Figure 1 (tube, rainbow, N blue to C red):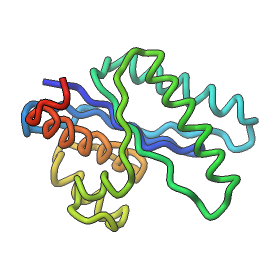
Figure 2: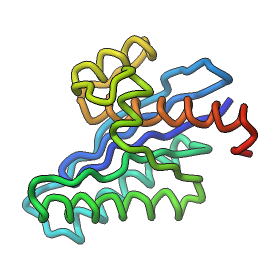
Figure 3: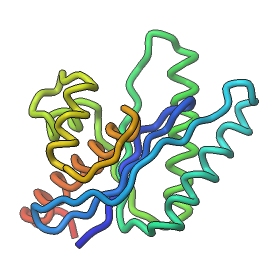
Figure 4: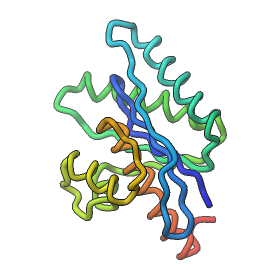
Length: 165
């Protein structure tokens, strides 16, 4: 059984979700969202993301983690800020010694819903279907669980083909 941490990165809100994966069986463990104070400066916000995600990792000790890749926003400034948040989150996972995989939003949506153009509501509904015990109260937490589910599916395929040790 493998404990997987899924992360839906954001500067305002970062979702996190933990599932266990054993062969093709998935189980919900925990989820939540880390919010930062928009009134604070960037270094404080990034430190807050690091501290909170570090606490989640220390509490649950995931064996693997997965992060959604950056998509380009209309605003270059928003894309840059999201990239900084992702960097802080990636460093946090790396410092904890947890192997990290990245998946595009399209890969996550296809893995969970079957369509790369699914809405956030469709993702949340399928997460609840796949993980009936889920307590996701926000779209960010549901999206993070979807990232973890995507990783569970991809790691199983990689193990079956011998690509992933």
